[in-house]
Length: 372
Ligand code: GGG
Image (cartoon, rainbow, N blue to C red; front, side, top):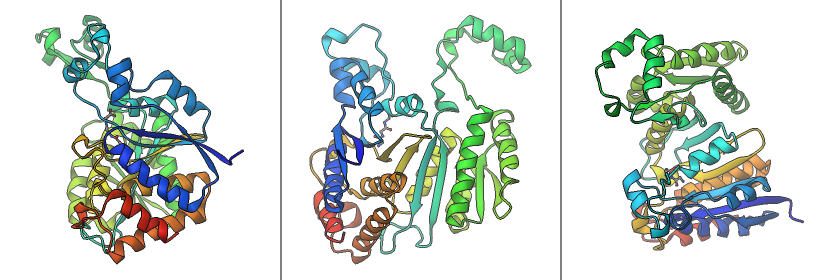
């Protein structure tokens, strides 16, 4: 029996291309693992009305972790129009399979390292090593949304907040509401993971990105809990920054930052900004991590127009493999893989089009594999 059972989820679009690249590298390191294919993505929405079939959830439950590439998703009306005729008109609603997996498996950490690899022509600066901890299960992405606003929800809100008076005359069908739900435990655990990481990797600061001067209750809860946790880590300073200011500072002085922690939506935005500083989504991997299960993926989507052309940069996918190896405790192999990726980049001989080269996705993976 193999040491690890890993769910294998290419998804669709270029997800398939970059997963083939991941396989080349995993074969080269000869990880003692069984890879179990699991269905996910647009095809299963169109044909089954469910982009994350129950059989996939069942498979995930039998695995140590999962490697996932990319999926397509489309706005509500387009999604409904692409269902097979038998499934149309049944009131099926597309739900993000990524968000669902995060919630189903309580993968509350979205870990997004953004490291500038030497020789990457797309680096904004060469001295960046940012790591974003984004809360992954609650906040504005909790999925508690209304449109039209139910009358009883309006009544309850009016009973609790005088500010609702401003909307009293707006018809219910003209109001949409998305709830930003924070829990004390949710705030505590993401901040604690960020501090633990900072301590383990020698970062002197953790920067909390919120907007507590305006969003006083949710951001405020996060800030208050972060201050308590920070008090337990004497060598690490807590920096508190508003999200709008952070966007500016990350462009002005990104080298001043290290570990960054934020809630779901702000963390999503800040981590994309941070990714662009080190070459863009082609270099951005993420780990969706819970207490005993994790899913690793490149942060890019499925880029359908490039699907099957094997021209996109697989580096983000390969870095996702590296994160997975770290999480599995295969630290030396993870380090060797990162070094092979870094060496391939700095040598600059094998490059995909985004870096000015003409090599294929698989050629980049082979160049990395050759160094392992
Ligand atoms: N690897 C990340 C990915 O595939 N992203 C595509 C995406 O964000 N889709 C929206 C969704 O979650 O449905």
